[in-house]
Amino acid sequence: MRIPRWQKIMMTFLGTVTALMLCFDITLYRSFFYNPSHITTRYQTIESHLIPDSMNLVSIVYLTDIEYDERYFTQEKGNELFAQVRKLNPDVLLFGGDLFAANADLSDEVRARMVSWISSISAPLGKFAVFGEQDLAGENHRLIVEDVYHQSQVELINNRSILLANQSPAGIRLGGFDITADPAAVAGSFLPEQFSLLLSHYPDNLILADQNNLNVNYALCGNSHGTQINWPVLGGYKQFDGSRTINRNHQEELDFPYLISDGIGCIDVQARLNSPVEIVYLTLSKK
Image: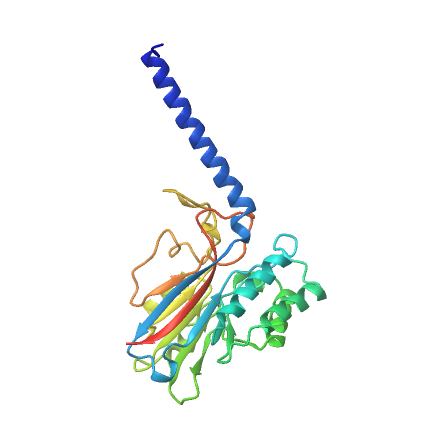
């Protein structure tokens, strides 16, 4: 029996619509029930002739926007996250801000759990952190974050820098910006003859570093909440302070390269679309 042409067209149309709806349903399901707990690792090599021999092949793990809140961020996800970091066995561990969600219930149990997780990472060359805006949600919240970092041997480097070395007087300069960045606080230690790595929660603060001619060789930032749901063509679902000019959908050309991490946790909406939960693993390489 010959099928009329109009019926073929209708069948093709309905089949296409059905396939698109099925794909959308699967994508939506994964965005809420799979992607937020599926942890990936992004590998990046940082090359420079300024990296001394003693720091060649030194590994750095960068975690940002963990935003731990036991109501949404399961203990199983935390266990898996830090188990993966332990397997990576980094020389240096960096936290890019927002350790806990701003409205998380920071009970003694929650705090002890985070201390245990972070302390389980040896990171022989040190653990360092800067604040994110959620770390500063209130005075008590900030004090708790500081205490957790202190108990976990994590050093805060807000608007200051340290020499990161590996059994040698030579090393690299690691600097950090607070939410309110102060380029002058690190300018004197960011020397042109030494490799400098800048850690900033807010990507937009990198513009200040560029405008103030800081000798930055590479920068790390986060605060990628607006692109945890990253629509095709349309981009991030929302803009946030600190990421309005530089974000995953729009980047500025600066005098130095930088990496914006997708982060670990979720904010507002417990979902991720085209934005993997990620650990960033960096390797320093002397050219």
